[in-house]
Length: 122
Image (cartoon, rainbow, N blue to C red; front, side, top):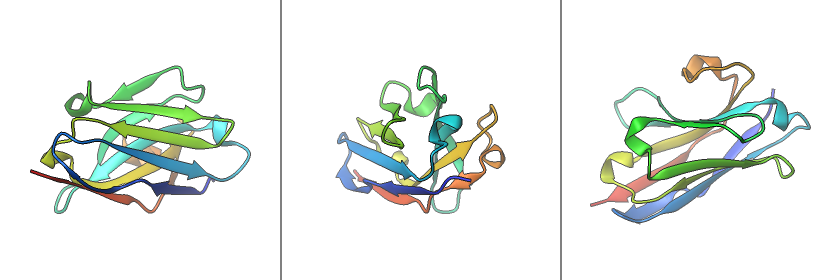
Protein backbone atom coordinates (compact mmCIF):
# COMPACT_ATOMS: atom_id res chain seq x y z
CA UNK A 1 0.00 0.00 0.00
CA UNK A 2 0.90 3.62 -0.36
CA UNK A 3 0.80 6.17 2.46
CA UNK A 4 -1.02 9.42 1.73
CA UNK A 5 -0.97 12.83 3.44
CA UNK A 6 -3.29 15.66 2.38
CA UNK A 7 -2.68 19.37 2.86
CA UNK A 8 -4.10 22.68 1.74
CA UNK A 9 -7.51 22.79 3.36
CA UNK A 10 -8.82 25.84 5.14
CA UNK A 11 -11.53 28.46 5.43
CA UNK A 12 -12.45 30.39 2.29
CA UNK A 13 -15.31 32.64 1.25
CA UNK A 14 -17.76 31.54 -1.40
CA UNK A 15 -16.31 32.15 -4.83
CA UNK A 16 -12.78 31.65 -3.61
CA UNK A 17 -10.21 29.00 -4.46
CA UNK A 18 -8.14 26.39 -2.70
CA UNK A 19 -5.58 23.91 -3.92
CA UNK A 20 -5.39 20.61 -2.08
CA UNK A 21 -2.31 18.47 -2.35
CA UNK A 22 -1.70 14.86 -1.48
CA UNK A 23 1.79 13.49 -0.94
CA UNK A 24 2.33 9.78 -1.47
CA UNK A 25 5.11 7.63 -0.14
CA UNK A 26 6.58 4.67 -1.96
CA UNK A 27 8.14 4.06 -5.32
CA UNK A 28 4.99 2.66 -6.95
CA UNK A 29 2.91 5.84 -6.96
CA UNK A 30 2.53 5.78 -10.74
CA UNK A 31 0.90 2.35 -10.44
CA UNK A 32 -2.13 3.83 -8.70
CA UNK A 33 -5.18 5.63 -9.94
CA UNK A 34 -5.68 8.52 -7.52
CA UNK A 35 -8.99 9.77 -6.30
CA UNK A 36 -10.42 12.59 -4.24
CA UNK A 37 -13.45 12.09 -2.02
CA UNK A 38 -15.26 14.30 0.46
CA UNK A 39 -17.47 13.79 3.45
CA UNK A 40 -19.72 16.42 4.94
CA UNK A 41 -21.13 16.11 8.48
CA UNK A 42 -23.93 13.58 8.60
CA UNK A 43 -23.40 12.50 5.02
CA UNK A 44 -21.75 9.57 3.34
CA UNK A 45 -18.34 9.87 1.74
CA UNK A 46 -18.77 10.86 -1.88
CA UNK A 47 -16.61 10.70 -4.98
CA UNK A 48 -15.19 13.98 -6.26
CA UNK A 49 -12.52 13.19 -8.85
CA UNK A 50 -10.18 10.52 -10.11
CA UNK A 51 -7.08 10.64 -12.29
CA UNK A 52 -5.51 7.84 -14.25
CA UNK A 53 -2.04 6.49 -13.58
CA UNK A 54 -0.47 8.57 -16.32
CA UNK A 55 -2.60 11.61 -15.64
CA UNK A 56 -4.04 11.59 -19.14
CA UNK A 57 -7.60 10.85 -18.05
CA UNK A 58 -9.68 12.50 -15.37
CA UNK A 59 -13.25 12.03 -14.21
CA UNK A 60 -15.11 14.49 -12.00
CA UNK A 61 -18.48 14.33 -10.39
CA UNK A 62 -21.08 16.53 -12.04
CA UNK A 63 -21.38 18.99 -9.16
CA UNK A 64 -17.74 20.09 -9.50
CA UNK A 65 -17.26 19.99 -13.27
CA UNK A 66 -16.03 23.32 -14.57
CA UNK A 67 -14.86 24.36 -11.10
CA UNK A 68 -12.43 21.65 -9.93
CA UNK A 69 -9.50 20.06 -11.71
CA UNK A 70 -7.38 17.12 -10.66
CA UNK A 71 -3.75 16.66 -11.65
CA UNK A 72 -0.72 14.65 -10.64
CA UNK A 73 3.06 14.79 -10.78
CA UNK A 74 4.43 11.26 -10.78
CA UNK A 75 8.01 12.50 -10.47
CA UNK A 76 7.10 14.13 -7.15
CA UNK A 77 4.57 11.52 -5.97
CA UNK A 78 1.94 14.24 -5.72
CA UNK A 79 -1.70 14.62 -6.67
CA UNK A 80 -3.61 17.90 -6.58
CA UNK A 81 -7.18 19.12 -6.49
CA UNK A 82 -7.60 22.70 -7.67
CA UNK A 83 -10.92 24.03 -6.46
CA UNK A 84 -12.28 27.27 -7.90
CA UNK A 85 -15.60 29.08 -7.49
CA UNK A 86 -16.14 27.33 -4.20
CA UNK A 87 -19.63 27.09 -2.77
CA UNK A 88 -20.82 26.53 0.80
CA UNK A 89 -22.02 23.08 -0.24
CA UNK A 90 -18.40 22.15 -0.98
CA UNK A 91 -17.71 22.25 2.75
CA UNK A 92 -16.42 18.84 3.82
CA UNK A 93 -13.40 16.85 4.83
CA UNK A 94 -11.52 16.00 1.65
CA UNK A 95 -9.60 12.75 1.31
CA UNK A 96 -7.22 11.47 -1.30
CA UNK A 97 -7.13 7.77 -2.00
CA UNK A 98 -5.27 5.25 -4.14
CA UNK A 99 -6.64 2.38 -6.18
CA UNK A 100 -5.25 -0.24 -8.54
CA UNK A 101 -8.62 -0.94 -10.14
CA UNK A 102 -11.00 1.08 -12.27
CA UNK A 103 -14.02 2.59 -10.57
CA UNK A 104 -15.15 5.45 -8.35
CA UNK A 105 -16.71 3.62 -5.42
CA UNK A 106 -14.88 4.27 -2.15
CA UNK A 107 -14.52 0.55 -1.43
CA UNK A 108 -12.33 0.19 -4.53
CA UNK A 109 -9.65 2.44 -3.02
CA UNK A 110 -7.21 0.64 -0.79
CA UNK A 111 -5.22 3.50 0.72
CA UNK A 112 -6.56 6.69 2.27
CA UNK A 113 -5.14 9.86 3.71
CA UNK A 114 -6.27 11.36 6.99
CA UNK A 115 -8.29 14.10 5.33
CA UNK A 116 -8.16 17.89 5.27
CA UNK A 117 -11.02 20.20 6.21
CA UNK A 118 -12.41 22.61 3.65
CA UNK A 119 -14.90 25.17 4.88
CA UNK A 120 -16.62 27.60 2.52
CA UNK A 121 -18.45 30.50 4.13
CA UNK A 122 -21.36 32.26 2.46
